[in-house]
Length: 206
Image (tube, rainbow, N blue to C red; front, side):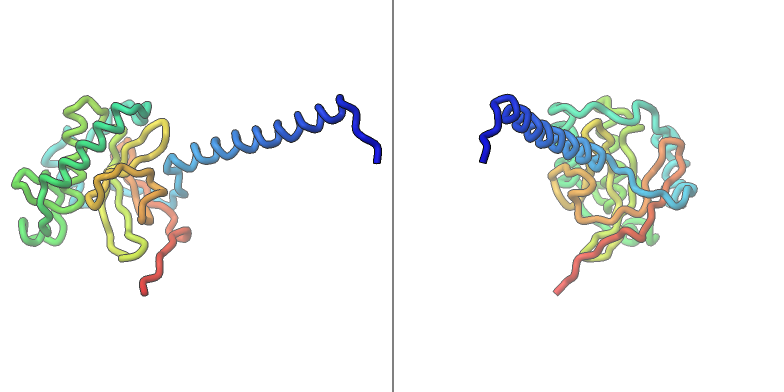
């Protein structure tokens, strides 16, 4: 077998290195794209009636002003984590029926009691008070893949992806790291986008 020349060997090595490096860059790019919630939208609809009532009562609180996506920094992540953790701790869970005599009633938990959407609204209020733009903080409706229950969360749109502030955990996670199928998300113009449910996945319970 003939030994390849030094030039040919160097060329072959450069090809291998280039292929590996390009693959790494492609994977990183794919991860960056998937980190931002970009699901297939099947319908644009008006606000959910309980949320519309909240926006009528607090009309300035639903104006999603820019910027609509923030540069992710360690400071921003720390702030979002602290607010998420504090609200989860401070607000005691209570059904809307218990507080308001209605199945679903969106409101700030000023009484110290509230459910998932109330906590999400409170998180947005506190983050806005800290200087975060309301346009980068979107309400969303999701369904748990195991328990099959509906749930409201707050989304933080950043340069590194869509992060979820969840009432069930103090940890801020990217949307695809959560145990949820996402049904709908608030849009910056006040309407809501409903996502394709054909791609939903569920976990078996034994």
